[in-house]
Length: 94
Image 1: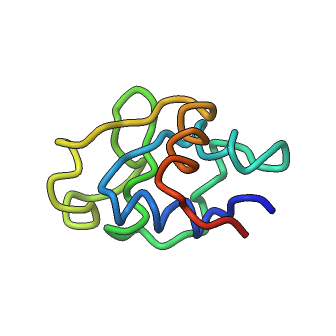
Image 2: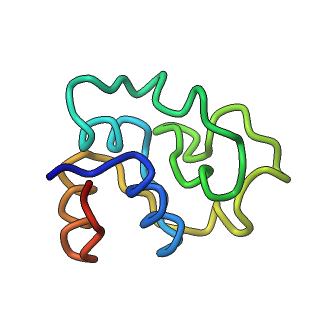
Image 3: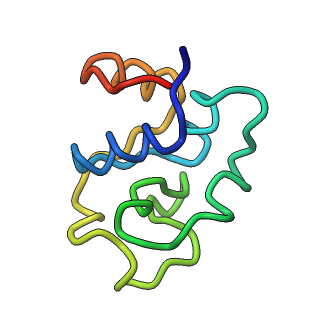
């Protein structure tokens, strides 16, 4: 089994942890491109945990669309670290 975008976002949201677009795309696999990862998803607090590597914030979100206190949380920067974290917290796959 493999992780899904919805599953990863749920785990990030529940634990209040951010991960970069690149880290999430890397966990999902070669068919996923970091730039397009969240393109068709609603801009809301739950989806705001996936962030840009430089700003550590979601792209093109207003402050009202972001989770409260988003900026005061940990950011997972790489696919390997995200994968390890998902395993450690028993995030469900598939």
